[in-house]
Length: 118
Image (cartoon, rainbow, N blue to C red; front, side, top):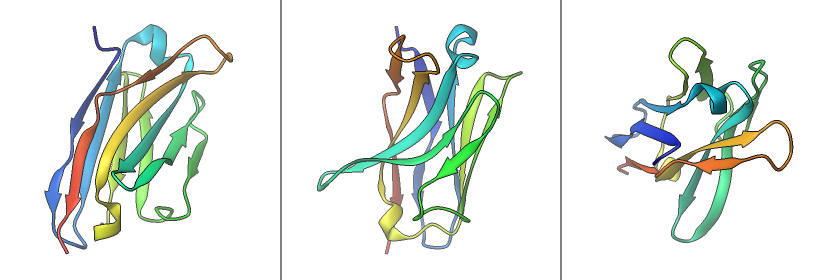
C-alpha cells in the first residue's frame, strides 16, 4: 500500500507552469517534514523544496523564486507550484515524507515525470 500518492506533472513549454501534489495519511502528514526531490538519468536525486510541519520552507538555489511549496492540513497534501519552467527542470519528481523524529519513517512517492521541451 502506497504511503504517498503523487499527482500532477506532464509536459510544458519553457516559461510554463505545472503543479504537483502529494497526499499522505494523517499520521504521516502531521509528523513529517515533506519534500520534493527530482532525479534525471545522469544526476543524483536532489532536493527541490522542503516544508516542515510548521510550514517552514527551504528551496534549492536553482528553483528559489520560481517554485513554491505549500502544505494543506485539511487536504493532507503538499503541493509544489512550479513556474517559469525551463528544460533544466526536466526530471522525475518524487515526494518524500521523513519523520521529524529521526529514524521513525521515511516514505517516497512513486515519482511523476515533468518534461519541459526546449
